Image (cartoon, rainbow, N blue to C red):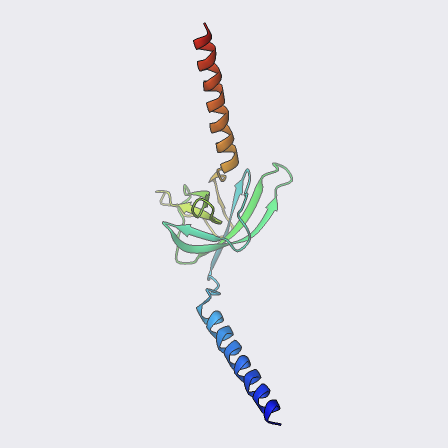
Length: 158
């Protein structure tokens, strides 16, 4: 009987600690939804950008990526984003997909323009820049080095 009481006591402590941990995890997590408006942007590619990714302006989160779909006419990627209702985005603003550090996740960076007209809810961001693919850059760098080595060796052979 004494052994059963001890096991029940340890089980109760584990349940209390697990409950405290879950409460802490949910209160510290950023599950807030943004009260805002939806705009669209079309990119050649959206490698690494996922639904739920941050939308940032000057490094501050102002929105979230809501959805991604393929434009069947242009074969570009159309993303839908929600922007905080207090942020007015000029018509000549641009959007870039940027990596959060060398190996970090991707986010959408908005660069505000200077126009006095603003993008309406449901409107589109016209100026976009797709993400830079690190593998392609490395390949170009290495290929460029090998071409220079070949040129140097052929010029010294003469």
